[in-house]
Amino acid sequence: MNQQRVKETMNRSQVPVSIFDHLQQPALVLDREGRVVIWNDSIAQYTGVAAAEIIGEGGYAHAKALFGERRPTLADCVLTHSNPGSDYYRLLAHDGEELLAESRIPLVSGRKVACMAVPLYGPAGRQIGAVETFQDIPREELVNESAGAPEDEVQVLAKSLPDMIFTLNRDGVFLRFLWTGGREMGLDPAEITGRTPRALFPEEEADFLSRAVRRVIETGEVISETRSFLWHDEQRSFQVTIHPLHDAAGEIVAATGVGRDITRELLREWTLQETSRFSSLYLDLLGTDIYNTNMVAATIIEMLRERLSGEEAELAQRVKNTIEQGINVIKNVELLNTLNKHHIRLEPVDLDAVIRGQIQRYAGIDIHYEGGSCMVWANPLLEHVISNLISNSIKFGGMKVRIDIGVMETGDIVTLSVADTGIGIPDHLKLNVFDRFSQGSKSASGSRGLGLHIVKTLTNRYGGRVWAADRVPGRPEEGAAIKVILQKC
Image 1: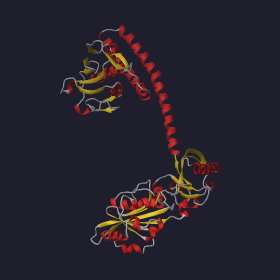
Image 2 (image 1 turned 90 degrees about the horizontal axis):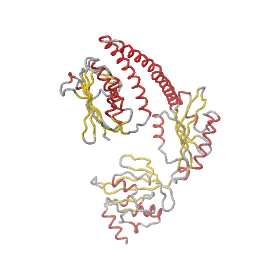
Image 3 (image 1 turned 30 degrees about the vertical axis):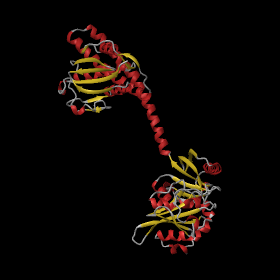
């Protein structure tokens, strides 16, 4: 491009060229289309590219001259109102429309630079382009300042978090130490900075931290460990994670880390484990001693009932059924514990056989059932679904309740219905009766306990669904009906 063309391009850009002629700092100006309209003498000397070779060029020609590749620079980001990519820049400041960043990629000459770009406005107040300037980063700054967050951001972060934040150099000296929680122990972070870990931790832990930092700096690996030790007359535990810290050239110059005090978390975990252990012990007692005692009582009552007749035999049967209700509660607690620990495997199960087997357990209860052979995908625990549905009807209908069990096949599904003449379930409670320990109205349904929750849990594991309805549609006061859908084999 000749000098006349350069002059014409500058004049058309409406940019006051004289301002940049005397600017000692390397600078370029792009017009609104991203074409180079000013390439001052300083940047020409800086890059070795004359203005005549690049004025009027677009397509990121300025980036090619500076960095050896065509891609957006900070000036392009100002034009497009976009953020510079983290692969190319470490953003230092973004104050309004101004961008200030370190270039992660050096210039073609190998220089490490900081770049600043601002929008350029014409006399009418309309943006007519963008200005970008460049400045070398001294080598000592590259060593002392990493590609991490600015110091004020680190300070804000440290005050907001309970974690210990630190940076150590190759000599194992703290360049930064921040820990809000340390003041509770009488530690002054300012007194730790500039000293080694031995000024802070017991000897063994200080040596661990120094060794870990050296390893991180030498290998670039990330180290994460949980450390427990006696500190200030108290057993403390910390989760320590240490990362390498790079300068703008990508060299590892230090190591930075975070230490989180997890003493209370470990104590809570231990407490939960102990609670779980005692809970398992209580469940074992519930499932053996109490269960066996109730079974013996039920057997004795059955023997007594066989020797009685009339009203006395009926009373004995009621006592037996009541004991069996208690046995069912124990079995439900054990079953819920099992379901929370183990995965259920499905297999073909004869639904008719399971229903008939459970009906025999409730002798003396008015249960009506007409069914046939029907195989569904379930497992032996299906008997708990039937048992809990019958038990639920007795619980809320009394010993004189009438229970109707029906099975209907439709395509690939089987619908099981257990209806009773009990107190029913009001409409506003139907959605919640399957929740664990759901509480209903005292005058209506009372506590449904674990029974229906077990039914829902097992049905879901079988790939089916369950819901509450009325025995007589639209008349909840005439009894409830629980519907269960299972997958047909």
